[in-house]
Length: 317
Image 1 (spheres, rainbow, N blue to C red):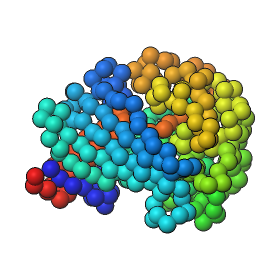
Image 2 (cartoon, rainbow, N blue to C red):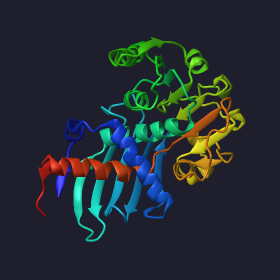
Image 3 (cartoon, rainbow, N blue to C red):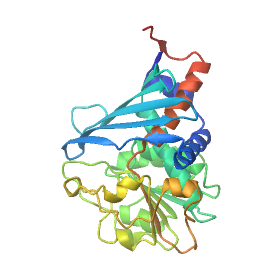
Image 4 (cartoon, helix red, strand yellow):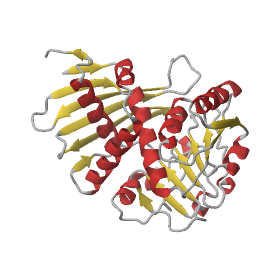
């Protein structure tokens, strides 16, 4: 058994396109019944403060995983507001193969899910990416989505603080993509693909009007739709969720919108059980809350690459 720190996972420098492919394959396995999951268990403590457990078993790969997440509101005493640990086990023996700090892994898998949705749902020749929120998730999404938008020529950033917005814009420029900072409304209205990664704070209020999404636009909400004004979400032409449960996940106290109008899941798209975009003028939204399917996929990939490179601390049991 090995233990991997977050620094170990970062040191692997796993190719984001490989991550997207592995996550896509995991959703295909889930659709085929080879990968099994149990409902997410969540214990809410307060606004933006909760503990969650996600678990999955992949009979085809031979791995099983459980993920423990601790979320606290940003701006408090904690150095980071989301911490996570994954335990990876062997399906046949039940033995633990790896324990890993999953902060970086979570960023990789979430961005990979969004990139998979972009590849399937975005119009051809999309050239403007809008990022509402400029933290770690936004950075991961910029890096992953750039790989599936070959015509990307401009990134627009909106954030609560000018400094964080400018840091993300500078990252984009360093990747060779022009970037500008603007208001949330300006960013959403001008973008072909919008990604919102807005954390829940004690004074949190939705800040994005779905009516701002232009004809043909694709909106991706990484915060379960919290950042979006609920009225108008059902007016989107097509709504995709990462898992069926999100249709019934509404928690008014946590500002999670009702998504009963969602027409399909990411698994439906990957397995081609739903056609996805059917016209260039459709306004589409993809909403994600995190998925045990993707967690198992990224954990298996990280373990195999770390094992091959003799990375991590060996723990003798």
